[in-house]
Length: 337
Image (cartoon, rainbow, N blue to C red; front, side, top):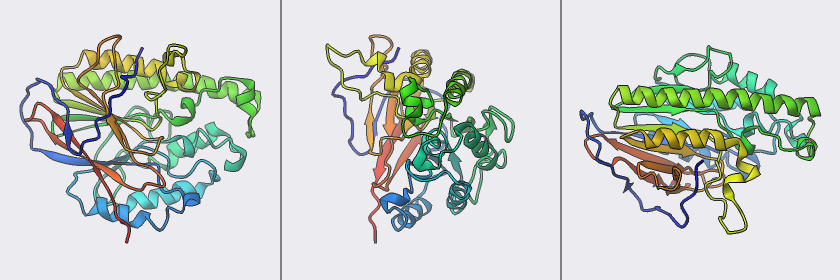
């Protein structure tokens, strides 16, 4: 079980997180993290070009987008995915897309058009992963857990400069877990059978996610990698207040993350390198060390939470495997014209 470390906030620009792991050095490089944009209802469209320009003008080797190509109260029509593909296609460097809840998990909502969420997930898998490569004007070859157009194609992996990078479909709205009949039908077009199907989908995908993550750690160990970067979209509940009256580990709103995060803690404890866990969903930048296993802080685990609408900025991560710290994290504030 993973637990939160209270009152840890490491928001210093360029903060580094250390270890004593040594390996064959690779050439330093940097990559970008962004997501949860643009939200049309928040008025993001005029602000987006400056963000894209900032990323395109940077020295990064590639970027990873941690989900939510639209806001959570607009319709999940086909044009949403087409617009996102156009946005990613405008990027000079490769972009690895990781799905968010707004483009599938939440599409059952009446204000989202009352779509079948599993149909939208199937559509996303067909459209947003058109090839085995990343998106962008230049591309990276990716490993995929599933075949093109099929289940788990969205779970990806690649290696760069002595680090293993992993994208996993673990989204917000409790990772597609439906906790009750009331939750099932509240402001929703779903019926009971669809909610039962959602929970079955979660169980299958969660098992696949754990298997992909575990295999990725095995690959990192075999390659003597200095670090591993795991990117998902959903906020797994690190920041739930901890009190004597409330056991945060049983929080229903994050129950869909607990199995995966517990397995992640186990893998992190067995890994000699640095683990950078990235998610969006909560829309403000944060960097901390919130993982225990079970009562000892995992010093090689760092969480980065990326910006999101209406704060359209991005995060630059430097990688230097010659340094015991491996990762250096800097929020990039984009000033609008």
